[in-house]
Image 1 (cartoon, rainbow, N blue to C red):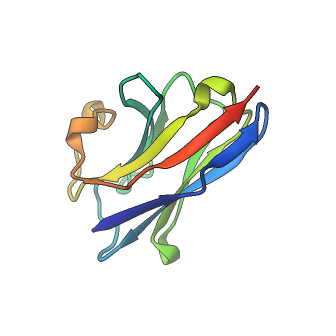
Image 2: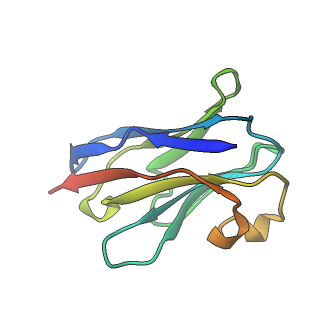
Length: 126
């Protein structure tokens, strides 16, 4: 399966963006779909995950209450709605998935994911 991340752009602090992660060449299966981000000079970090089997969602503390994941099964797309954006949210955002389920405790680990999108840049100006 190929993942295509889109929706990034330049936004002022306090603004909103919605990122999309579309699957092609296959469909999302029971494996989780996650968003990670990487800011310049920093390591890739977990943002949020949607367990496609249970519907459970989990978020990093830094985005909790501001970011929300959702899905549209008909469009084979997972979304990341980002509100109240801050300059520190500036990063390249990546979506990722895997073909099989994995325990909840491992869903925030980048190494758990087999398939990655190309990334979409989000820039938040102050």
